[in-house]
Image (spheres, one colour):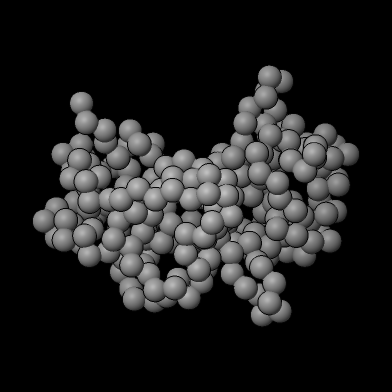
Length: 230
């Protein structure tokens, strides 16, 4: 039986829900891209001509701050989509995407995707439903910044990172297999590094998390789950 979109990307991708009948044709119109560690997929300001779904590996989205520094916006892992908004407008890329580890992505050029979608309107419905969910998630994230304490926002980030980069150890704790600085964590939630540092140090004292050789290990995910919902 031919591979389907769900076979390749799982149920978390932007194209989850595309029927088996369309999967083959859609995969035929995609191309495979391989990136080595540190290689850029595209840069902030580049022309946008399509979108991507991560098959394996991990990538980060960054942009330059007004002071000229790098601001970490998001981290992508297997199943995550990159740049799907570019399918519907002609705006340049709003961030730079760089591989954190060796990565494989499937790319759909805008023209090829739309020609296929024009003949298969279910794809439009799929994208619109996903974009609506993204909008709800964005609204939830904004609400969290207004109503959820810093510890709750940081807990959400830790749990999200554990989903994409986590490895379960023999003692059932989870190690996030990507080194992150406190400044990068702070940038992801729009907080100061000093405030994030205070929360992390408190969690270390309470054995909620540990930091070992530059990696975070989640010792008490139940507490993090509780914090993440306020």
